[in-house]
Amino acid sequence: MNTHIVVEDAFAAALLERVLPSAGAPDIRIVVGGAQMTALSMGCSLRVDRFPVIVLLDARSVDEASIREQQREDEFFLCDVGPPLPAALVLAVPAAEVVLFHDVSALERLLAAPISERSRIEARFIPAQVLAERLRASGRFGSDVELVRALDAATAKRLSAHPLIQTLERHVAEFRAVLAPPATELRRTG
Image (cartoon, rainbow, N blue to C red; front, top):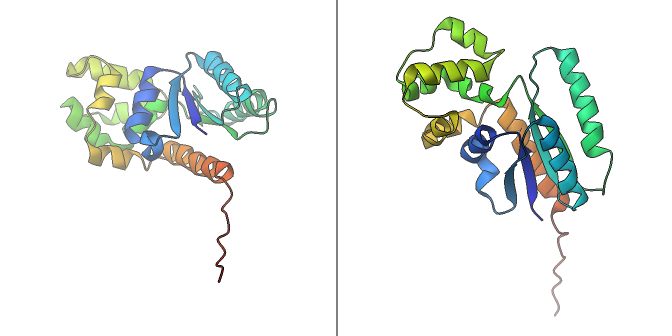
């Protein structure tokens, strides 16, 4: 049974395809769901269609109280209704772009430009905007998706250590354990 990971946009899909260790497995499908509520609704629909689902949304905040409230409301919408299948909501705090700033030196190499201390600090709060500014200033990539696709294997592996990616990978492992067919006992006759 395939586990679907629903994301909001092409950037998040490209990022997961590149840095999530389980992304290439045949039982994992990464799906772009659109804006936040649309992605959440798609996750619910997939669950009703009897697919395990993980929905990755941008928190769009670093305020812990706001994040907890969003988590509670969206988890209720996704997980408390529908068939008894695994479902999880994961919030990227504040946005999925923060993963790229986990290895600033690699990002600087890709962009062929240094990232100022100010931009590094701002990236903790508004990573999508900082990344867009750095991309424009660099002129090396036409989009954030192009940048992600340019990540080499070593950088992708380092980025896979980001807590967001590790959380997603943990959910995938938990889902696989729950969905695995029961082991059959082999008996020797003789």
